[in-house]
Amino acid sequence: MTATVTVGEFSRLTHLTVKTLHHYHDIGLLAPVAIDASSGYRRYGTDQVDTALLIRRLRELRMPLADVRAVVESDGPAREETLRAHLERMEQELAHTREVVTSLRELLTPGHPVVEVEYRFIPPFRAYGVRGWVERDGIGPWCEYAFGKLDAVTGDIRATSGATYSDEFFTEEAGEVVAFLPVPPDQAPAAGVELVDLPGGYFAIAVHAGAMTGFDRTYAALGSHVAEYCEVAPGPIRELYVAGPGEAQDPESYRIEVCWPIRQIPVLKG
Image (cartoon, rainbow, N blue to C red; front, side, top):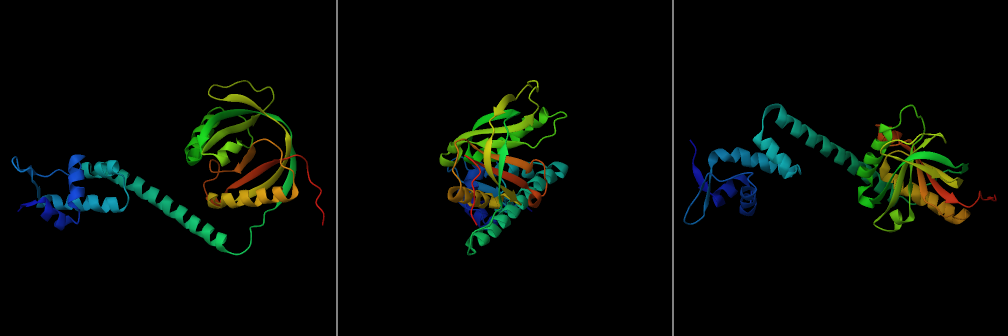
């Protein structure tokens, strides 16, 4: 038997606040079964309790309202696919949180990370490039877009991809980033990318190995080394993705060379 109750009683039944129930009504997610024409009071059916509890549970899992609607309004494979996709996102967030906690503990451990620094002269070369003015918080999606375009024109080219990052990318909210893939000097143009000529120069290089949560520490250690032992040269920092997020599935197998421009190879004493 189904009964109807006031919005206040329905709130007590479902542990959803009246304000939340009003919002769900306004967006069409959970509408009352009846609204009094004179008073405007809303009444809900007891057969809506399970739906309300389902919505509450999904919101506790931080599922976006659009996805909650998809679960509530569908069943079978469509519902299972929405749930699966959200749970996968949560597992990825949990893994990222664990990585950040590990990195935080390392950061709080006395002492500084030790990096091996290599000095290398990189000759000038031509590359396919994708250029953009990128906000810091949007670098991940932009890289997926840029390297996707480069992958589309790769063909038989086998080379280590990379990117250059302007000073503004670090000092401001956004800056120019150029994703590149080295090509032969006589490489023909390709649709969707540009041909760029990267200058040669000396670089101090450190390898970041592992998940990206500690990437800033690699930068900090290399930059400190350069400040102490080298003379910085103008020009953007480069990253070479020997095994980056696009090539390696396991974050622990990431291997990225951070290349800091210097004027010449220093002579280190001792």
